[in-house]
Length: 326
Image (cartoon, rainbow, N blue to C red; front, side, top):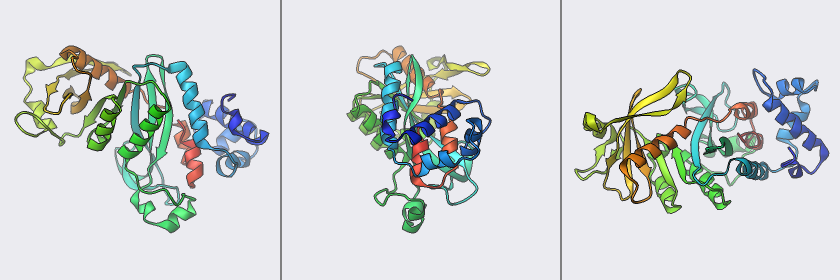
């Protein structure tokens, strides 16, 4: 709290921010302004709601302070920047960004609000360092609806890969040490994001969809068809990390493709998936595979959703962004 205290010009919001942080860190079954207020001794949530909706402070400056704090404790030049989206189910239509859309939370299309998060993962630990709310076209094409939710006039439609790229570039421009980026097929299927990572000389391990076409000497082929052609002797069993039931073992292989510096990394076990991987020239085959597995393992370390859950109790743009802070 000492790190971010200077972002609050008055003592009242500073104390409310401390109250909010204590509530987020508490072992509460559900976290919203009511439950946190009760936990910290307030009769009503009015003070917390004022902090989130009307008090004057800049959430982006608090984000920058949080990032600096994370780096003091977790910095590593081999760190991984993991991009991932989180959906929160909603019943109404007033919450900013809500619409019927796919969310992994439900495993299908539901009425939900979706945000993209960037997590910093190193051998010392992991923490969320940035966030961005996905505002669908159904919102950006309706100025009246955006106005009711206090969405700034200059905010337009931006895809999830574009949001992830903005956060990664903002992070690297701030001098953050990282060697890798990782994400699922939402990001791996996007050639513009991959090109931006290559331009920043950031290695990556990005999943691709089964129908994604991969360039090979024999022509472009679907990723799943390519994986089926790999001989049995080419697969090697490696752990993707420990889960609730022990190590998660998968069979891995790698295929050199015609794109310079890139390989595709099929994985089979609970289904089959493929990833793009980019590494420095001269990397040996085994090191290439083991490093990709290590980077992919970091994707399994998920951030805490408490702040995201609390953010979605509110309908307006500013309040949501203030709480989407990992």
